[in-house]
Image (cartoon, rainbow, N blue to C red):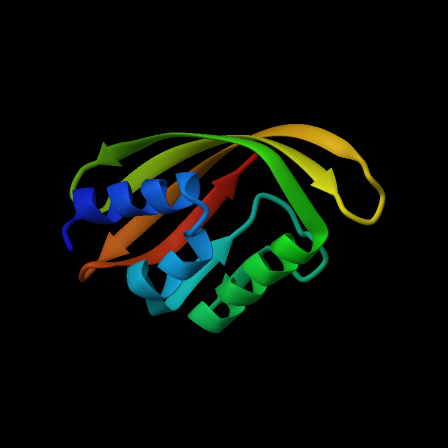
Length: 119
């Protein structure tokens, strides 16, 4: 897939609730994910298995009653950005939050090789 196809599929997957399923399809095995802050396991996760683990952790700990995905916004031939606006509920505490994040995705050889989350 080219950059546009990867970006559009990532956004569609997020909107349609199949972001986790898209990991194997869109990400390189050695992909790196970098969070804006340390959520308890460090900011950087290396490898597709680790990125799956992050998604599993998120799904186990948070409900997302509202999600708006804007983009993709292409940049050159190797990057794109997506804006996420979401309402989350912490399953353990019941705390409800509204958050907005920007994610920058780097693509090489038809796969996402790095994602950087800004919040």
